[in-house]
Image 1 (cartoon, helix red, strand yellow):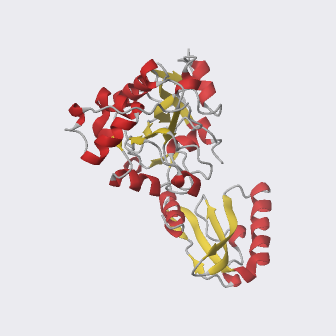
Image 2 (image 1 turned 90 degrees about the horizontal axis):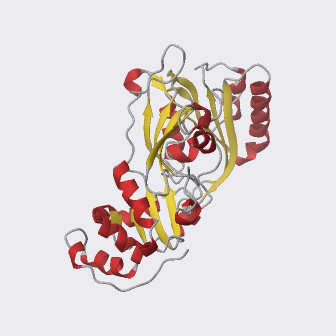
Image 3 (image 1 turned 30 degrees about the horizontal axis):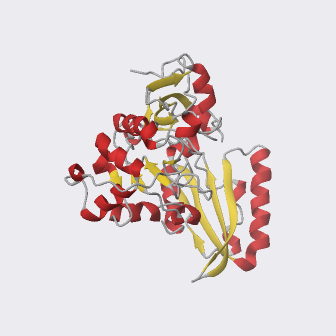
Length: 343
C-alpha cells in the first residue's frame, strides 16, 4: 500500500511526527477513538504578497521551493536571511544539524498542508529524487532531521496536546526538547515508547492520508512501530495513557575529582534497578564547560516518588556542587535537564 516512489521522493531518515492525540481507554484497555535540487532562475510575481524581497529572489533560484510556494504554501516557507530560518537552525540539538543549510524550511500548520507538500514534491516537475528532511524536535546528534540541499519540513506547528488537566500521562522523552515522533517511532517500565501507540495518521508518498492501527492497515501499523521512518509522514498519534503522579529526582552535579565515587553510585543504581528496584533510574555523564571545567553529573529519578530509595543513599555525602532533587512532575525534571543544557 506504500507507494514505490516513497524512498525516492521522501529521503528522510526518521519518519517524524507531532500532533498528538492521547485518548481515554475503554474498560477493556482499548483506545476510545471518536537527489539533487534543480537550479533555475524564474521570477514569480504572484508570490510578492506572501514573501519579502530577499525571500523572493531565493524562491526563484530553487525550483522545489518555488513549487511549494506555487501550491499555496508561500506563507509557511522560510529562507536564508529570514529570522525564522535562523531561529529554527539554532534550536537543533546537535551541532552537525545546525550547520546544514536547506534551500528552504517549510512549517506546515495542518495535515492538509502536509499532504499538499508531499504531493508537490513527488511530481516530475520537482525532480522526485532529491533531499527532503522531516523534523519533529531535532533532538539527535545524527543530522537526520535537516538537509544541506533540499527542503526541511519542520512539524513544530503541529503540536496540540492536552493531558495535564485530566491527570494522565503518556510515554515521552526525559528532556523537553525530545520530539514526539523521533521517540515514538523508535523506542521503560511501561514498555517501549512505540508500544504505547494505538494508531497513527499517516501521509503517504502519493499524498493520501490513511489511518494505521491493529485493525486498519495493520502491515503499515507494524512497520511504523520501530521499522524506521521511510513509510510515510506521521501527522497524528493516538496513545494509550496511564495515571500521572509526581516523581522524586533531579540533577546532581559533582566536582570531577569525585568521578570514581559517582560512578560507583551509578553502578549501585543499575544493580538495584535489575534486582527489585525497577522504579529507580538515572544516568551519569562527564561534561566540560568553559566556565566550570570538568564535572560529573548524575541525573536520578524514582518514578514512585520515593526520596529515601537506596539508589540515592549517600549522594549528599559526596558534596555535590548542585543538588536539584525534589518532588516534581515528570515535566519538571524534563525542564531541569533542558535548562542545564543551555536550551
